[in-house]
Length: 259
Image 1 (cartoon, rainbow, N blue to C red):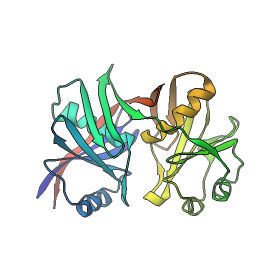
Image 2 (cartoon, rainbow, N blue to C red):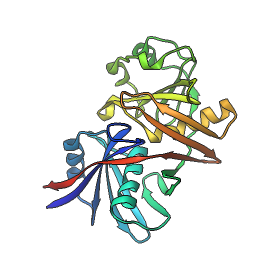
Image 3 (cartoon, one colour):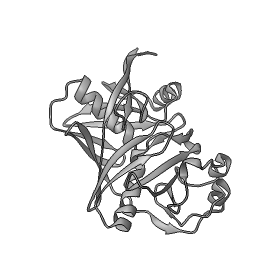
């Protein structure tokens, strides 16, 4: 069996930036074990699979270790493949996922995703987070991930967390964040339990970051950068219970899988 595969750099203005994702358009679903093996073989933070069904595209996302309920950069990458490679002509693409319907549209040279907001609730700082970073955060919140907020004086690019400590945590990952001079806020994201020591740009994390920063900064539209080695820029808007996340993408690779 031969399958088309594309590797897209999402939240990137040029190749070798942003977060690479693999995208595999399918005529029908493969079995779960095969999709997981493909994701493991790709060895990227996410591989997206989608099929066309009625008016929507059903989408699923796999890390090298397991399936996840929501992924931002691989959704952006999938929309790029549909718009720029497969010739999708409608203004809006609606992905049907485990996190509900996710409308996506192109505008002003970017792709904008409409995701559900996931407000994080304050919590006590887990001991594993203290051990991992060796610094006391301003506050810690939790939703799908732990959101660890540091003082503006902490240079989060210099954090080198103990990944074994982070593996003891019960949620998907840990997002560290603080304010910035160049952007409204910045972040980094770690998910070692999902086979991702540090993610390059984590679109789904902004469904949790935006409710926090929009309230704290008293603005609904914000700019952000994820400070990984590759880096990635995002524009985000909070409207009610939805977060609009915008970014660009570029094609790095197209080919076929032989299985």
